[in-house]
View 1 (cartoon, one colour):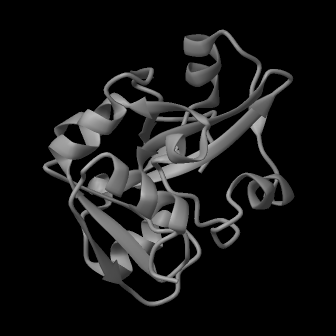
View 2 (cartoon, helix red, strand yellow):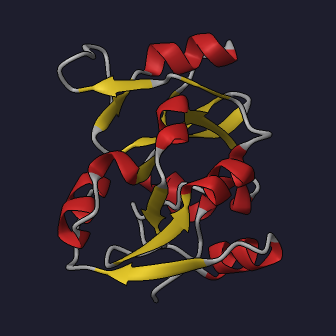
Length: 164
């Protein structure tokens, strides 16, 4: 597939230049970063959450764990992880589990981790388990600037109540 149609259209519509990187099949964002030889803090992973008000996608560095409590507190919501069948309905042009971090392209609400602000380059899942989209860090910040953001994750050694 290389890149999901929805994501490709979104980047084109916003005039964002990007390239794709191919890597061996992986199941997690951190493994994708390792396989593609990119720094894990520059690989933005997406964690889909839900509650009675709908879905929200948390975007954070792949080497961190989401602190669900911090997200719930920041958004004043009672969120939980979305299920894999739900992901298939939300991201119809993506393989299950290969959720692009630019989930606003799919009409979803996004909250992103401020730690991604400092990356000169950002890599995200392209919609399958063998490709990444590479963006300039400034372009990523421009696409995310109007979306809520704060510190929502921490490294494994710093976070107890977390989700990967």
